[in-house]
Amino acid sequence: MKKKKNIILENIKLLSAGAKGVAIGKTEDGKTVLVSGAIPGDVVNARVKKSKSKYYEAEAVEVLEKSPFRVDPRCMHFGSCGGCKWQNMSYEKQLDFKQEEVYNNIKRIGGLDDFETLPILGSAEEYFYRNKMEFSFSNARWLTAEEVNSQGDINDKNALGFHIPGMWSKILDLKECFLQEDPSNAIRLAVRDYGDKNGLDFFDVKNQEGFLRTLMMRQNSKGEWMVLFQLYREEKENREKLFEFLLEKFPQISTLVYAINPKQNDSIYDLDIKIYSGEGFLMEEMDGLKFKIGPKSFFQTNYKQALELYRKTLEFADLKGSEVVYDLYTGTGTIAQYVARKAKQVIGIESVQEAINAAIEHAQLNGLENCTFYCGDMKDIFNDEFLQNHPKADVLITDPPRDGMHQKVVEQILKLSPEKVVYVSCNSATQARDLALMKEHYTLVKILPVDMFPQTHHVENIALLIKK
Image 1 (tube, rainbow, N blue to C red):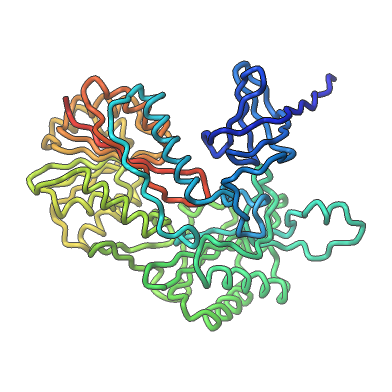
Image 2 (cartoon, rainbow, N blue to C red):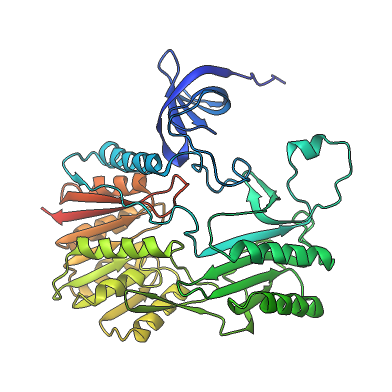
């Protein structure tokens, strides 16, 4: 068997940021190198992981010169945890690179160049911006290189934290995390410590057995907390003692819920959630709109920035009160209801029935009688018959998943021919692809990148299109 060559590319100057947070450089002969584990401005030696005809994929093995954009990462787990890969870059430069990526995608992939690019909307909170976090228990934690190389026995192998990237069975035992405000860290550490001291079984991923499986925490803007445990099996006495310990120690927990999950996966959506304490949900408010957030609810994890995103979406739509608005991929109807107060009628479409149920419930809760919601696969339900049976849209808002819109959906939008389209995206590459399909019929007026996830490469974008 042929041994793989260990190719090291030397002295690579990294010039810009690329998709998924890699840094981009060039070899002496002009071939592009996509480097992980470094940031733009660094000069590195990099080991080739994949060699393609037009580019290399590589990982930095040595930083020869540090980028002027580097900062000291705040978290002790940086480099092991896959969560905040840009924590070693100044936030100002993160925003610059995100803005550049969105603009380049729209221009290069979309083939569009005559549009206004508004300055990226940065997050007011660079840390502690998430209102939901999920952690996994393990009885075989990820070991550091020092631990692996040491000769001594390692007795404490329990962990409560994140999966190591590319090593799903290994969990990083998290000592600190700067993504969710207090008492998130305190609750997680207290649960881990209690489990250790009381001999509770942490989950064995390989053998699919144990007691404690996952821990999820949500909070609302009023400082009320929901804690959700997934337990592999029922141990009533152990469960109740753990729950009582937590509720006594953390009065901020307004509801505690749990599920018994003996499945092969941690997905919550097909589980029966049991309420141990409180109402089983939290209430959230956004500019006067109320939302009921349950254990299975989809809700933007960066609450403050989501509010800015919705405000800008409404601003782009520029509604006068007489318009019929379609909201595609409506989810739990958050954007639909946000714009409903300025529209004549809003029609929301979404493929997940639980989300539609929540959207209907929220519309009733908020006294919005001008919202109608439909459930079905977008490419199937949003068809000619649907258009014939519903009023024509003056404005269409679309907020699809990362894959963007199915070509059939784009074709239906062109048939519907609304005067205005506001396209909200969490992936500017697929957004640009979709905009290219619409450019014969629509003019791209302006775009606004929005940073929902500081310390990561992820960026949202809002685009305004006007019918030609």
